[in-house]
Length: 503
Image (cartoon, rainbow, N blue to C red; front, side, top):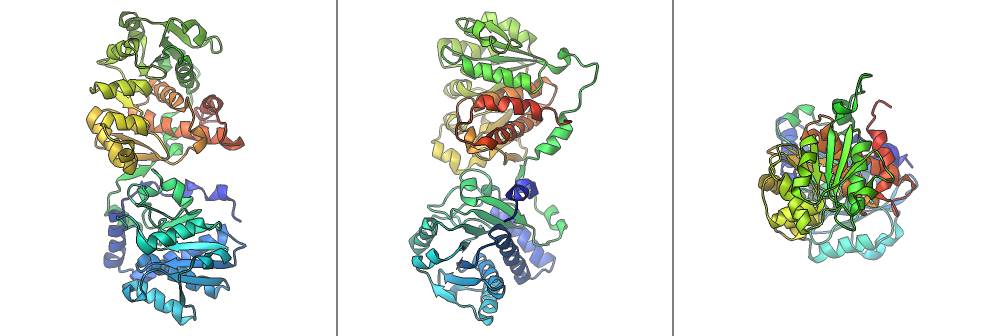
């Protein structure tokens, strides 16, 4: 088997497209570049077959499930190539053959000409194969899967053998990454021409497995004709641009002063984590404004943090004056004290990172921060937009844009495939991170990382993009010993490591 570490998302292109945009790219390739549609179908089936051979080198028996559209046509090509290569191939037809047309009909005819025919679907036929190939639906699906199609997908998912989806797991919405009733749970997905944004966020990552891409040799010029709607974040490029090696004459004043506000009674750990993350990412100075009852305890294990007991907005003012950037929310709570702290920073003409309970308070009394970076998870986003969380997750791209329009500044929507957007700019998507990061304190770290980057003179948008990437990358590095049981504090050594790209 190929080294899967070498086959990760690093080879994926950066531009992300909606299904309609990919169809337009496909149209341009066929109509304006005079590439026959059957030629593109042949290339797609070949690319998927090559992935199957590399990914499951010991597989001998495969079942290819084909629908009646072009996705099924790709499946016919794969089946024909596998059959000619000596594989034991079963082609299971879903939908009437009489509905085939165009290139799919041609691919079907080419398959039958080599002696391979389709069979009627039966679940028991899936139990005797090494790999199942999903060629049921393509990117055009926009309605809930039902009837026979649903039964087939559910049967596929009950099988323990691995599954390869062609272009997109059948039943997954290409634009949003939501499941249309039911979807194939693939182990690998080979997608073509344009990378679909829904593969990488929402529930997409759970259904796609590892995602691979082939441009089908279309001319690069066609991509100039269709503007993509989102971009996959390239943290290596961001590092080159934003984090430079420090001068020998550097001093702490050159790298900003972060003030973290939070830590209501019983939640001092949150503000402590955010503060150390800011320090580890390279902020020159880090202060904490927290409850007087535990202020002295904050810096017992990290004396570099300056911890201040603050009980009133008046006491907070001198700390605000000294700060380069303010972060509010980690462990803030929703008490009278919490509301007073938020009110004190409401019109502050400095960058403000807003997280956790500061977001929950903002949802109760909405207003626009002048220089904000909002970092909600889906539950907080639902409260901010006054919608059910299911609506947020149903279209995360629309949700993050709605947050930015309503509250201004830079907005982050955390989760699998974290999204970042500012004003009318493109949405950026981070593909790093892992389920081990689903634990308390991870968001507090991200708040500190972003604030620490802003303190060093990086623009709020670039600091947010880079912060999201470095935080996720540190999480992946910390999870090498296992995702389960990962703690937020486990990321701190790696946050420092990734803050020094010259190493």
